[in-house]
Length: 201
Image 1 (tube, rainbow, N blue to C red):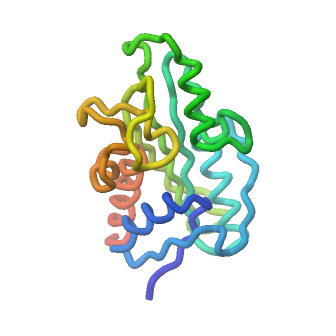
Image 2 (image 1 turned 45 degrees about the vertical axis):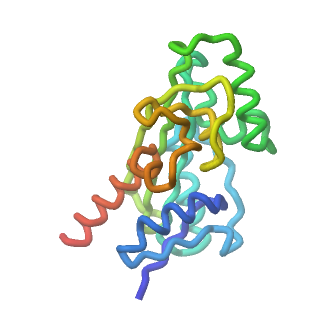
């Protein structure tokens, strides 16, 4: 019998990614939208705070263990912006393209050495809504921002995130390679390893 976990997101890309990774643990990942859980205001000032807020909210309304991630892009030249505001950088209803356009405009004319950036992902797992010791995992993916959009895979800032080791943007990588390298892949691997320890204890 599969254990059910709720994922505090409506993003189908994230649901699919996490489902594939947790499948081997007989864990079924269900999006919070399946339970009509509304989005909760992300009032934290860090990725960790926001991830905990989202996971607690989803767990409270569904009664299930919850997993949530908060992730975003930090650009050194912009003092870490867009950071926790990555998804709504160009406004509350911004599309991925709106956010990319704003970012590229802000970096216009800036030389490649100053375009260093990284994706951060904080992943939180709560056994229940009142869990005082959530599991917190963090993954980082170093790169830089291109001057134009390249690639059709992925979502968010993937088409402008240059990965030096691959000589391509994140959006040009196949799914398998991206999950090996990405911030979310690294955070999920940490979570999976911690779950293995707990389940075998």
